[in-house]
Length: 85
Image 1 (cartoon, rainbow, N blue to C red):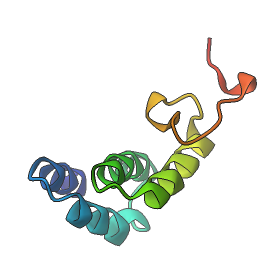
Image 2 (spheres, rainbow, N blue to C red):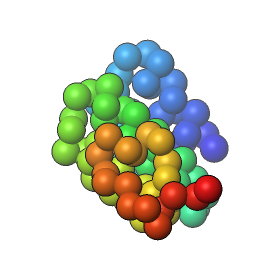
Image 3 (cartoon, rainbow, N blue to C red):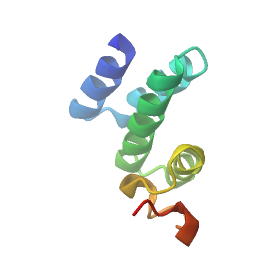
Image 4 (tube, one colour):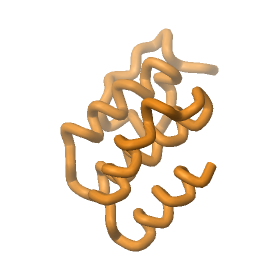
């Protein structure tokens, strides 16, 4: 949880590149639930840093978990079978 708060704090401070670095440094050792939230924060930080390739990478990874996430839609094609109606 502390890592997520630090990433969010860096984003609020206008330091998206530092937030991305923090996500990358902690992503592999995070628990499954924290990993999802870290990837989401990484996506937001990448968008704020105008790092399209990194944003697409996080969006792709997030799509494997839940392809209907609104945050990833600009980066991935939503398939009909991914919709949760």
